[in-house]
Image 1 (tube, helix red, strand yellow):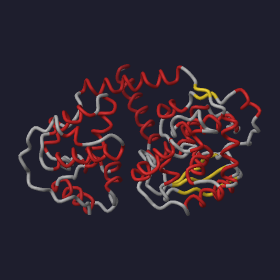
Image 2 (cartoon, helix red, strand yellow):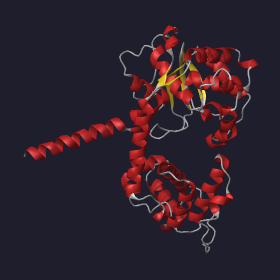
Image 3 (tube, rainbow, N blue to C red):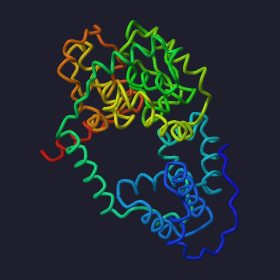
Image 4 (tube, rainbow, N blue to C red):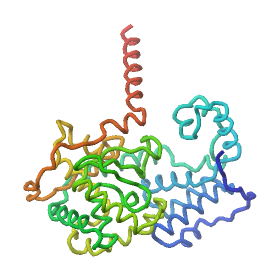
Length: 370
């Protein structure tokens, strides 16, 4: 059964539009406090439009506002009516054993379920014009980011990362974590949350389980194959060594705990000084994978999508504008690459959707001919 927080009685709210943004400091921890407060206000019945106006004062770009508004909705408690209707729908059909499955497969059932949030939240949304502006800006940002390459001395970074994982017992927590991020392409939270795991699958191949962003990628226990830039046995040993120094945390807690420390680590101020953002390590990893493995005719964009765990090519475009340096051509190749072909497409049912869409299109074309 779904759990919901107790809903306090609806209170009268004074206009605090000028006060709330000032109550919270900067940084991710303070930001989450602000977002939880916004969700609490919606739970308690405050009009969604006024909460959104409050957020607009803190988040001045449409893209950021849209992302934060989506997070606030997830933080909100569902209404009792919604919980009751979903429980009833699941009990009526044993196959709908989880809410996620019911949303994906039981579309006809879900249509009869009342809205998840209360009526006051109906105005907590961007206008159609604002949504379009967000999409245009996101598209433009991808174009701008891909218009120029950023150069890294990638060969030296790769040698450094390999040395660190081979001698992981004598290196600090942050250095080992960043080396694993470069060699496996996994996110900070995936490497350091104490939950995600890797298993040796080949000389330079790992089975990875515990992806942070699983939209359209199956259940939480789904795993897939990824190439690694050092011997898989060595990487697994370093990963296990790191596990002994960390404890299980949620992805949010992991990011809050380590992100700022990673930016200030010795590795980033000396050998990896060109790395200004931790997330750049994922892009460098994908570019190195394309160069160092033989992919049997697969296109670089497709390889990037698969090794990073994405479900579409648009997500992968921002990870490609990296120049690995002139001397990277001298780096020894690692043989035939291994990845899970179509794993995410099959898991999300996109292939079936594509076939159905094509069938609908052909049917419509036949009607036009008639």
